[in-house]
Length: 193
Image 1 (cartoon, rainbow, N blue to C red):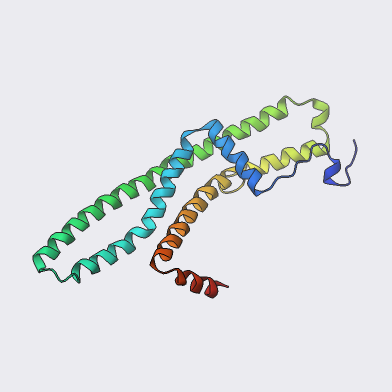
Image 2: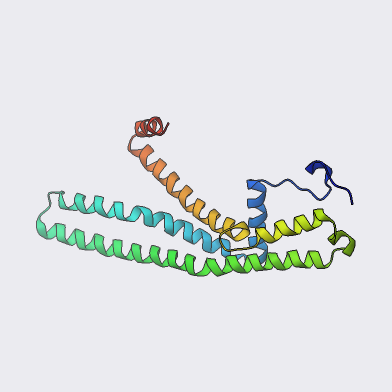
């Protein structure tokens, strides 16, 4: 058994990074459960839209009340808007609940299939290699990467969904502010720096 001084001397060592791990996990998600990405996209759209829904409600109610129309017309417009708003809120909330209820156990199932894959590799490995410290180290790291719901593989799946929701929300906010006045972006950037 040779001890390796550097990671590049170890033939079993592979460099991983954030993008390669993300690509690997997305590949495994598609391999084991193709529907989970579609469900996650539903969750991203619904979750991001729900964050804007209440601010839109306030703006349109103020616009309807201050429109200068007679009271009967304002009430008719307000009731129509509230019905549309309630329907939209119901659909978006249902989509968000569907995402939470269906994606969580699918993430667990994908993680379990990855654990089975890891165990299968270890069982089919030559017994002499299993006793090498490098192989045991790799096996231990693989165990840690699939060890729980909030860390490792499944934690990255949850994090990717959350990051996608936040990214869509930031892009929509950026476009909305850009449409209103592009100088606001310069001011917000200056304030952040």
